[in-house]
Structure formats: C-alpha cells, structure tokens
Amino acid sequence: MPARWRRSGTALRTPVRWQRLDPVVRDLPFGLLLLVLSLIPAFHRHGTQLGAVAERPFDVTAAVAAVLESLSLALRRRWPVICLALVSLGFAVDQLGGYHLVAGTALPFAVLSAGAHLGRHRRAVALALTAAYLPLAFALHRYGTEPVDEFLTFYLVLALVWGFGAWLRATRAAEADRRIRVAEESRNAERARIARELHDVVTHHVTAMIVQAEAARYLTAAPDRLDGALSSVTDTGRRAVNDLRHLLDLLDPGHGTGAREPSAGRIRGLVEQARRAGQDVDFSEEGSPAESAGSADLVAYRVVQEALTNALKYAQGGRTSVRVRHGGREIAVEVGTDGSGGRAEVPAGSGRGLAGLRERVGVLGGEFSAEPGPDGGFVVRARIPSGSAR
Image 1 (cartoon, rainbow, N blue to C red):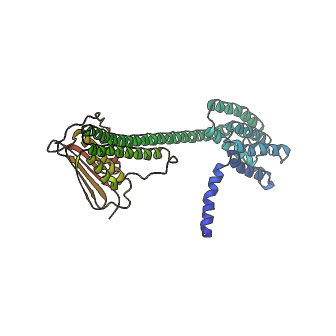
Image 2: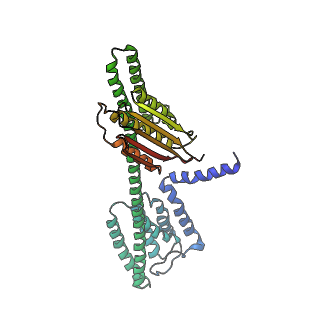
Image 3: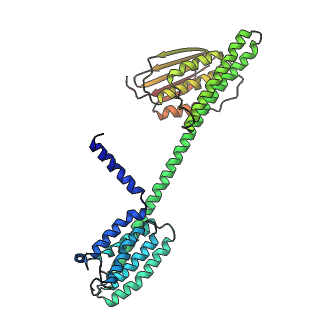
C-alpha cells in the first residue's frame, strides 16, 4: 500500500478514536490551555475584568482561582452543574481579588455547556446562578468603580449564552428524535417487505400444492400418473422450503449460507410448476437477462409468481400466457388468462399480493396494472426499470 494511502487512513481513523474517548479527557486540553496562559506572567491582568476592582499581583489565591476556572471545564459535559459551580466560584475569587485572569474566559463556556448538556432541573440551576450573581455584582460595585449597567450587560450576555446552549440541546434532541423515527420507519418498511415476501412464497407454493393434491385424488386408478402428481407436490414443497429458508437468511444473515435471491432466470421454473399443477401455460421470453439488473429481476419473478398463483386460484385449467421481455433498461412482464378456467377450492385471497406488487414496481419507478381481460380473464402487466444499458 502506498505511504500516502496509509497516512490518509491514519488521518481518517484519528478523529474516530478521539470521539471514542471519555468527554472528560476530550474537554481537558482546553482547560489546560487556559491554565497555562493564566500562569504566564505576560498574560497576567489581561483576562476578563468585571467591576474594575483594583488589580493585585499574582499569588497563591490567584493560582487557586485559575485552577478552579480552567480545569473544571473538563467536567462541562459529564457533570455540567459541578463544572458551572466550580468555575463560578473561581470567577468570583478572580474578580473580587482583582486578578483578572485569562481563565475567567471559562465562565461563558461553563454557562453554555450547562444550557446545552443539563437534562434536569434546568430552571432551578438558572435561578441559582442568577441568585449567586446578584451578591457578586453588589460586592464588585461596592469595591470597584464600574457602573451598574455594566453588570446588567454582563448578566444579559451570560443569559444569551445560556439560551444558545439551550437551543443546541433542543436541536440535538430533535435530531435524535428524527433518527429514531427514521429507524422505526425503516424497520416497519423491512417488516412489510418481508411480509410481502412471505405472502408471495406461501400463497404461490401452497396454492400449487392444493391444486396438485386435488388432482391426485382423481388419479387413484392410474398409479403411474398418480406417482407423477405426488412427485409434483413434493417438488413444490421443496421449493417452498427453499424460499422460506431464503427469507430466514434475510432475517438472520448468519443462519444459513445466504441463498441467492430468485431472479427472472427462474421464471421458467414457475411456468413448469404451474403446468404440473394442470395449468395450460404458454411461455415466451425475448432478449436475455442483464448481468446485473439490481432488484428488477426479483420483482419480475414476483410479478409472474403472483399472477400464476391467481391463475391457479381463479382460472384453474384455463389457458394462461406468460410474456417476458428483457429490454435495454427495463423488464416487461405480461401474464394473462382467457377466462376459460374454473375457480379452485382454495382459500380466498386478501388482495395483498397485487397491492404489494404495485408498491414494489412503483418503488423502482416502473408501471404496474392488473385488470380484467377482453374474454373474461385477467391481464397483469408490469414495466420494471432495470437500470442496465445494453
């Protein structure tokens, strides 16, 4: 692998590793930066100044205030209330002592973090912060020279910072809710898709088995034909089991070997199955399937499967035609009956199959129709974009 690729991969992995660290570890560097700047003599008395109290030289008390203000920021996301309390205490010592440290910049960050990360007792914390600010402002005004409106302005700035933090929190909550809704919608869509697959598999194969078993009842006097009929029932059962295993693999990918999805190339097998069930099926296929047609081949397979199932139910023994055409960018399917068959003794359908097919075809941007034929039968047509240029 080229060195530049290795460097790029490392650069991509570094932010991910950083995000996995504990929030205290990630927030500590900024606090350390403020502490270092506060300890450098060149930056003394160049920080936040509220109240204009007479300046004092840097001493042990100033160092304690700097530690409280700066290092407490490491707690701003994990324990925002504790962070705000410690920073506020350090800020009060800083301003009343006249040190005016760079670490005083930590107060707006602590207020912002409390507004953004505090989940409970938000109003109580805001009132407590206001109540603590009033005596501080009174003391600074008494020992300093700054007018009252400056204290009000500083308070309004802190309130604005708190409000911005609350807005960030609300935005994150809304985004989290949106992601939950999207995940739930995705799960519901997947459940509906699997339900359609189960409907198609079970309805088609079980209908064919019922029709074949009914036909076998009248072949007891012809053992050779009876054996063939029972063999057809067995083959249909095996196909049903294989398709159900495929659906199980979709639900649990680690369960099986990942059987390949049905494709348009297996439509001929559906036709042969219907013929063995006693249906007169005329099949024709134009063109050759594309090497990669995405989901179009599976949808085409399901259209033919559902249409043949309905033919076995409502036009048993009638003449049925299946036409499949593989075009440049689409698969066209047409299945129709001539109305000469009779209704089989099978449970009535729910109408879910055709509705599911219309939805599947529509998702791919195709067209689907199911309507009565001119001679009393029915015709199912589907045009399914495959996205493969030939």
